[in-house]
Structures are given as structure tokens and as C-alpha cells.
Image (tube, rainbow, N blue to C red; front, side):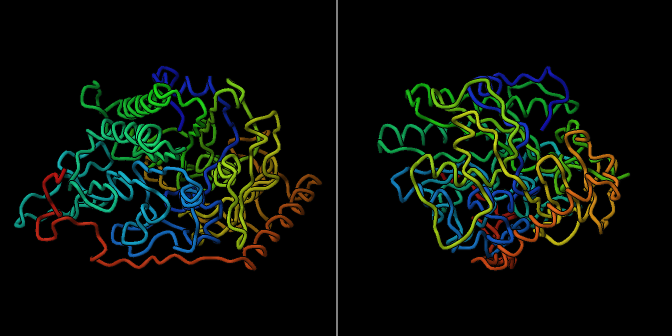
Length: 473
């Protein structure tokens, strides 16, 4: 998330920040992939939409079919909708993105790019072996997927397996530009383009022409991603699509266990815990506070900043509101429409925001961390695995730990439970949390199917080693 230093060249992201509004207190809806993306697409926490943890390579299900994505609603309103890259909300049958509101789907993998092998593995820790090429070869490696190659999907068809991750940036760029041209020239429709990049997830990769050593892979991959953002921005400019909103954000914090192949949490180090990581999979600030910028020429004030408390949940109602589309009224939402924050000088965001358990501690999806204005309460804590291998122990807190983030963004020293400030904040925290849990208990909620079977694994040639097949396109 944070650059190791200020020398990392990201001219296009810098340009986007100059053109738009940067948010300093913006949070991913969860600290792992599937629940974060499900919440972004539906405006609902995992306890409502059913997605509380990641789906597997052999998952039968995905985002429950009775959940409605903003892509479905915009598609029905006349938008041409496309998704490039990561979905991670189900790949079988009706769970494929083309059945969830997207006209077009192009993805190097329907899940994370560490969930399968390739012939030229990217940079990861541990370093994973390439796919087997013979049925007489077996290869097992702890923490590595060796049995099935990563597939390349176009709509519902696998067109290549294993794919070449090192060529992905150009393929992403080509697919994204093609969809922009398709919407603006061929179909003459308004466009929703959802680009969910493989950057900056391990294994890291980059364009082959970039000079990189294993000592500096993250910086180069970040520059590669920046170039892709630039390609999309240039295509929008070429087509004179000035009335285009661009929303750049992340789905969770860095994966500290991956050491030099991960990002940085900056000041959000979760210092209270003696051991364990404070980023991905945790509810410490480093796990869910993500860089976010939104640009829209002549609508959003350029080079501006907002400190409003916001979430990826808010993307759902906001883009629907801007498009003049109403969400389904038969369910409740955890998101707010931030149109007034984007277009005006309002800084009124969430009064409170819940951070779901995302693997480091507690039951998946449970809401045991509560943000209330600049205070944050933990009913449970736990740390993810660090670069050095340490892991914070799960601990329940009754009464909860409460930090004042305005004075302690490192989350090092909790308030004294005997203080007036603590007692006052605790009352509001309990009131907000109990109200939300009751609201969820009385809402129309979904339940995801997390069943895993071998037949659900994406495989273009089941009889070949690692499902290998030549390029079909």
C-alpha cells in the first residue's frame, strides 16, 4: 500500500490524484479478497451477503445468486458492463461474472494469482515451482498450488492454461481499451468498466522489458500497474469521454508474510500487539485502510483531500445514485451515498464503521471491531503472520480495547477503561454495534455455498498434467 520511499515512479497515479479527490480515511470492507469484493459489489457486509471468507479453486458456489451487484443494476439501466481480471466470487455456472451483470469478462484467473501454477512462476515467498509437464512427474511444495495451472478466461471459456503472467499487463491493457472502444464507438452506450488488477498480489510480475532484481520487485510491479492505469486514462482521453468517473481503491492491506514481495503499512503498525502482522487478514488499520482517489473532470474538485470516514461499501450506492439507478428495496445496506462528499466540500462520512473478522482472529465475518468517529474499539485482536514468521495471538477483550486514532494511528496505547472518555465512547460503541447486529438479524440475508469438489476446478484438459492446454485463441 505504501511506497518504500518517494522514488517509486508512479506518474499516472500521481496525475490521477492531481485531477481528483484523495481520501485519507477510506477502508476496504474486509481484509481479504472475496468478502471485500462481495461487499463492494453489493453494499452489504458479509453477514448479510453471505460471503465471509475466500472461495477456493474447487468451490462450487460464489456470491449468492439472490444478491444483486451494481453491475446488474447498471446493465439493466442501459450500461455496457465489463470486468477485467479478478472476480473471486465464484467461477462455475451461474456464478460466472457474465451471469452477474457483466456483458464481458476477461481474467487471467477467476481467483487469486497464487492459486495455481504457471510455466514461468512470478516472484513469491516461498518461491513456487513451475507446472508439471508430464503425467509421470509429481511435484509437491508446501504453500504452493502445483496440481492445477492458472487458467485464462474470456467470458465462460478457458482460452489458455497455464497462462503467462509476465504478459498480463499488455493483455489487460488491450482488453480494457477494447471495451472502452466497444462501448463508446460500436454500442454507443454508457460504460461500467471494473478493472480488478492482479497487481500487487503475489506472485509479483511485470513487463519483461523492465529491468528488475529480486531486491526490488515490488517497486517495479507497482510501476507496471501505474502504466496500465495510464493506458486506461489515455484511452478515455482519446475517445473524449470527459464525463467519466474513475475510482481507484484497494481490497485490503499488504500481505506482510511475503516480505519484500509485499507492500508497506506505513504508520498503521498495530503496535499494541507484541507479535504478529497488522495488515492483510487483520482488523488493525493496516489491514483495511487503503489508498483511494476519485476523479471526474469538471465535477470533482481537482487536487483535493477528504478525511471523511468511508468504505468500499459506499461505492455501490454512490455510483447507482450518480447513474440515477435505485437499488433493490427488499434488503438493507451497510453503505452510504457519498455523492455530496465527491461533488461538494462535505466531509460527513460514516458515524460508525464495522470491520469484519478476516482470518487473523475470531469467526469469519463477525463484526467485533468498531470504528466510531476517530475512536476504534476491539472486542477481539489477533495478528497475521509477519515476514519473520511471528503471529499475534487471538485475544478477546471485555471490556474492549479502545484507541483514539487521532492521537494514536499506530494503535499502541488504548484508553484507560476508568477514564470518562473511555466510558463515554464505550456507550456509543455498544449502541452502534447492537443496533447493526439487530438490523442484520432482522434483514433478508444470504448464505454462500462454500462446498469444494474436484469437478469444480477450472480445467480445459482434465487428462493433461496440470490441466494443460495450448492457447485456444
